[in-house]
Length: 257
Length: 219
Ligand SMILES: Nc1ncnc2c1ncn2[C@@H]1O[C@H](COP(=O)(O)OP(=O)(O)O)[C@@H](O)[C@H]1O
Ligand SMILES: [Mg+2]
Image (cartoon, rainbow over all chains, first blue to last red; front, side, top):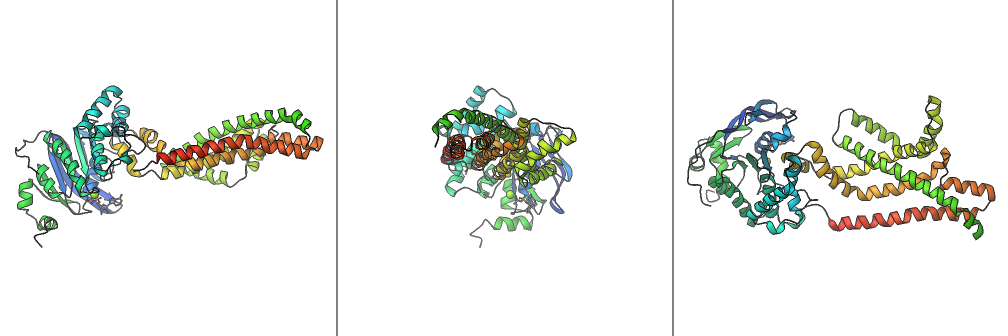
């Protein structure tokens, strides 16, 4: 995978996370996380399984109640209670490992549901945009198919398009290739690389290290609910400063054994 | 078999069948809506209300329709509430049917994973839009077999309406037997009436279920 050569200058802050604390019952899962995500930036979250990556994404999308700190999107504070939560979520696209397409709807219906019902946009215009997006990910011919008729990689590309059609300010990806057969991983990662090049702000959780290196502007390494290391991909992959990051990276190095 | 007798009294059965169908359709339609509402309240654990509904469902499922009707028809007037036979019949049917429908829909709702709801919320839909466009359509199609069994069950239950003096099929049959002792003919007409109502419905449901199975939702 080719690397994004040009260094981006960080845009203004889109998401501010300040001293975020998240507990499940009495166990702290995220401990005092502070993190700013800038316009157009691609942040890749790495870390061992169970360290809190999914939970962090879910907090950013308001799917989890938080016990401390705050999350601010474009100056507006996220709060599970707020009646505006659905409006805030319209600015955030999220793609899950398990695709979660709606099985009773065709591909096109899946994509236009949000724009039509949440944003009340005109059907004709939304369908046109949905078709253009499908074309871009090479799935226009599947627009009338049902999710069960698609391969995993196709489903995941549809899920990405479904989120994109809402014109999100930021996209969150949670291990979106983890459930895919190896030959389908590439087609999904390519779509994400293209998005990054187009300047989409993204937070990506992945175990594809080559991809992380290629797509990231910044790597955040989480362990046990704490940000242990934060650096540019070059530094992180060639010269990690903490032992925990070194150990983690070693897991992906077969020739090091 | 006295066919002249049958010919003479068939209109009574038709009238009674029309009444039964009318009350059953109203009662069952309301049961479906009420059951759906109950199952949604339980599914989302809406405070206080879901406790009340738990109690209602236990009460409704563990008492016979006959007793429920007696309560409505003979018990309520003592509290100053007088309901007509028809209102009693419909109310009784809804009280019974609501809980059965709620249980049928529950199995459908429980088959919808939380991830579907979260996927909908992530798009920026409101909770009620998620219920309407994502949860209900899937839950209902999963519930169709249990749901159709309940419709048939409730129609059969209408045979106790005569207890609240409604001129339904059972009541006509009882009267005719009492008046003329034409037991064979009367029972023949009674059974035929129920068959004519239930058989087409049963076939229709089977066809719908088969279609749904072919459509085969799910990833
Ligand atoms: N709904 C939940 N209830 C209780 N514990 C949870 C829940 N979700 C996640 N956890 C716990 O929180 C920790 C972080 O989970 P998660 O964010 O899914 O990790 P990751 O995505 O990095 O693998 C894990 O220890 C996990 O067991
Ligand atoms: Mg995870």
